[in-house]
Image (tube, rainbow, N blue to C red; front, side, top):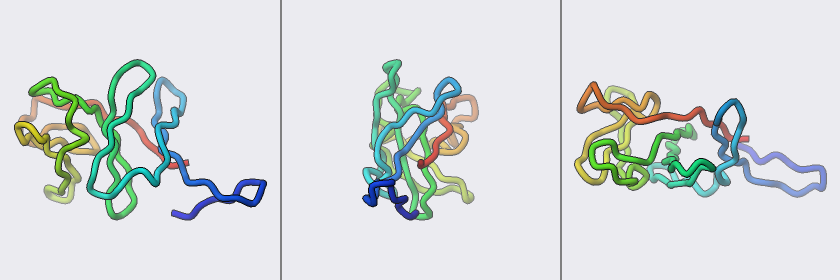
Length: 120
């Protein structure tokens, strides 16, 4: 991704934004995300979100709360792919959550919230 120049001639890093209630909310600079590692962020309503980016530059946002334990730890999980789908494995009980749909790959009845995300 290239950096866009401002009118003053300086450059700024793109920001990660989430769509919350029909409005884009800026979470952090994209440069704070490292491929394969998660970052937790606090949303205005008190929820936590786990942000991830992959080596291809795609960014994902899911609820940070592990539905099996109630702990806010998914941002600390290990990332990988299963049948071409990106996932994060909870660091506690190792359940895997699809980063695109939020569906648990180990229990079809469980899912976490996902968020529409963009870099702007």
